[in-house]
View 1 (cartoon, rainbow, N blue to C red):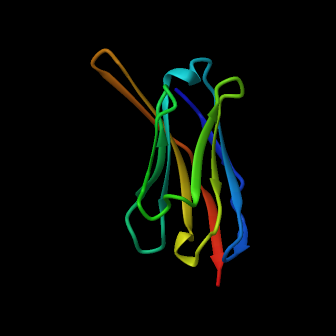
View 2 (cartoon, rainbow, N blue to C red):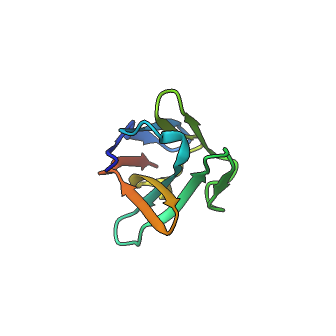
Length: 119
């Protein structure tokens, strides 16, 4: 079992920046693909950004050029740097960790951190 704890959510004005962090309780953090997802009020959860164990990144079109995902395997932490924030970025942001081990798939979620962007 992997525990994920997000932090960094806050209320910020449009155009501002925030950095989210997600600390994982596993000694094999480097083997996990990590991701950030978000759920806005009244909407389904959507992918924001992912980073593989080999540091390959992918982003939702809506955040490309504004958000950056990164990881520090020595600290068992994944980050999401969010710049040029827009009111439509308002959501609860969730951290995800996942990996395959043979045929088994392991998938873990954090409790979420609220990001609110005021116009």
